[in-house]
Image (cartoon, rainbow, N blue to C red):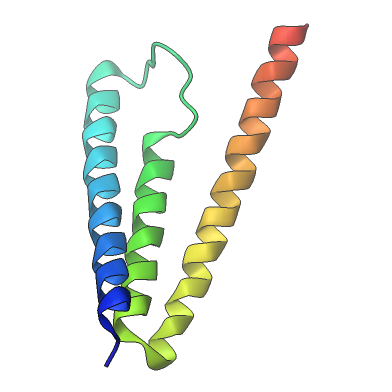
Length: 100
């Protein structure tokens, strides 16, 4: 049985992940209505926010279930690393375009 801190952190991660997923769904609907024309470049696209929300939900679930289920953290960390690399590459490309 996990202690109170683990339970709190697990439910916090799950709640944060669900909030991110809900926000991304709203952004996806807005993009669909606009025809995917964004006014300004954003650091994270709606799909990336959805993936990030799913990763947080996986981390919270793994923390809550304990034991072997802790391995659910591995795909979540992989998603977070891929998203960090994508965002970093996008920011580097934007800055190099501005410098030219």
